[in-house]
Amino acid sequence: MLESLVLVALGAAFLLGAYFFFETWLRVWEQQEPSPLARTLCRTDADPERLALPHVAREIALAERRCPTCPATGACREWLECATPSGSRGFCPNAALVERLTR
Image 1 (tube, rainbow, N blue to C red):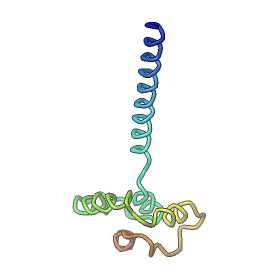
Image 2 (image 1 turned 120 degrees about the vertical axis):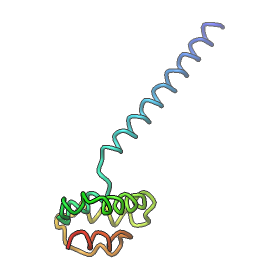
Image 3 (image 1 turned 30 degrees about the horizontal axis):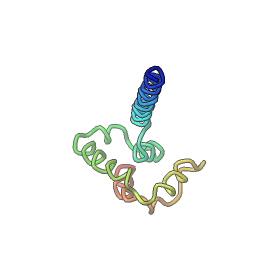
Image 4 (image 1 turned 90 degrees about the vertical axis):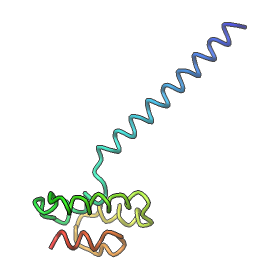
């Protein structure tokens, strides 16, 4: 009986460890993936020197916080995956910022 309890406890500990390892790995992987806004700025040929300006970097950081809660993630993903970078980005709440930085 005691051996069974030990095996169950070891199994549970292994499963918890595997779960936390997997969750940590996913979070690290997601942080390495560029944000949709960063991908949009790259795709629209935004000027890298302009993006490096401190006030612009702050604006971008604030705008990137909107991406995870954006209601248009599907449209954004489709636009980012399509072959041509042209087309309307009217669905994006950050469209005005993107337009300003790509002029």
